[in-house]
Amino acid sequence: MNKQRLTSTLNKAKQVCLEHGRKFTIQRKQILQILLTTDVPLSAYELASCYKLRTSSSVSVMSVYRILSFLESVNLVRRLNSANKYIAYGTDSEVFKRETSLFLICRHCQKVETLAVSQSDVAKLFPHFDDAGFTSQTKQFEMLGVCNECRAKLA
Image (cartoon, rainbow, N blue to C red; front, side):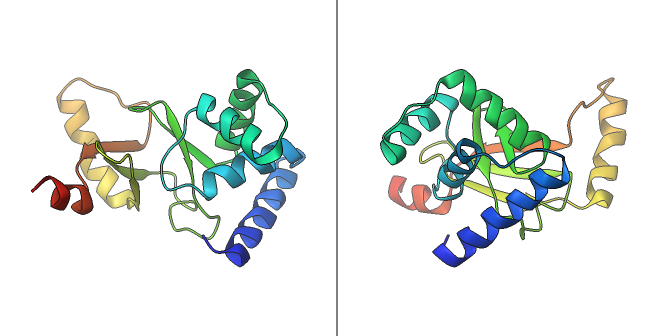
């Protein structure tokens, strides 16, 4: 993400926080900025480590979890359940505007591609869940596989 787009995204994130009656604290901004500028999902422990490297001050892992929980509640980050790691995406992203997402996660390099899923596609899936006697509690889908770059390296 280039510097201009990062600044714009962080400004929009600040506005989102204010709309939810919360401040966009320096720690929240730093954690979000780390996620926006990395190509792979990060755990709370990895974020705490990156935070210390970037700011020369430490943040507890519990604080990172609280920050992530808040950022997730205002739809600025998503938790990848299969990896117990987090990703962020720009507020101008189509995925940011949608409730349902499909995350394609490479098992080798951990790169994540995020796709917006239309409500009509989701509506087609839920009857199959009902037929299987299963009730989904999330509208987030994760698929593990191998990206083209890693597949080429493995060939």
